[in-house]
Image 1 (tube, rainbow, N blue to C red):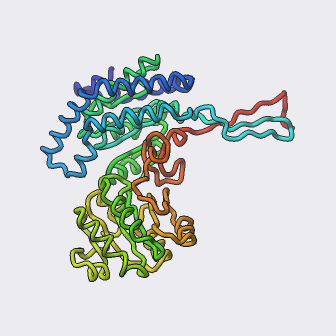
Image 2: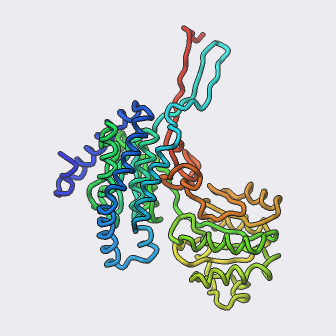
Image 3: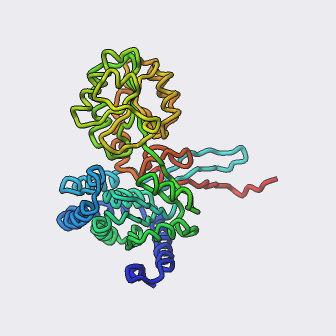
Length: 427
């Protein structure tokens, strides 16, 4: 049975198993491929995406039309849209990944034992990675590029809302693989919008080595609960900006506005603002005025609402909500200790930023916050693998095993021990 049988309503289980077996075979080829072949495939894929820019934009227009007809929110449409600039950014992202150092075969550690055994710890691919995602069609390109560079085959299950966009993108990626003499099965897209395909993927032990979900909380919770395969995930992006007593006002205004409003629908967008009571009289209103004028709804505690009449009263639920919209919760706290306590109680261990000129306060915040990414005097919107110099990311992990923070090519590898001897036997 071919994978195309899925679209004709035949046995989904058998077709998904075939997809997995093809990926496993391709993973063995990739594991032996040299760095040059992988780079060639990525450069050719980027060229193909540029060549197919009109076809990709046309497919994306079909997805956008369907989403608007279904009443999608502006934030959702922003995540789904691929305009000319978006297509070029996608191609450039693939080239950035191609330019990265190939991690496969890197010697992480090297030592010799007293008995003469030489032991090296060497990076190796994970194998086959399953990526389950929702509305962002660029994930198709980013995930495939990162997996290819790190020597992994990938099975991509995009959301129904980005189905046509993803199919156009994967066609371009396949041309890149073919140009480099690598099998198309290195990057496969599940060719159905049937949600049952997700359940099938989560049970494909022995065929898929790791699952990476990207999307809303309900998707990630489902994957975490049902998967029989290890998962790299984050549940929420409840990110905070804390304006400390030692903060420069103009910096606090600029960073907070960018952290919240640059793009409200990404996981690195600030969802909660904490302000030190020491500077509430000087810093609070200017920062809130910037946000409100930019179209952001402010939900504050009693002190915030008393100072800013345009703010709405926050509920207990607001402190732990990932809005992914132009809404922010705001609270006054007592210094770094108050900020750390609030974030520990309500945060999601994703990304937090402190704005301060006080080096000691910054060091305390950075050391005590248990989040994947902590920043000093910078916007939370830098929580992105591309901004970290990783070329792109397959996601942001809030787990502590096996990867944490932006997941790039190094995080998509494991390692093995290679031991060289000269006839040693163990006594």
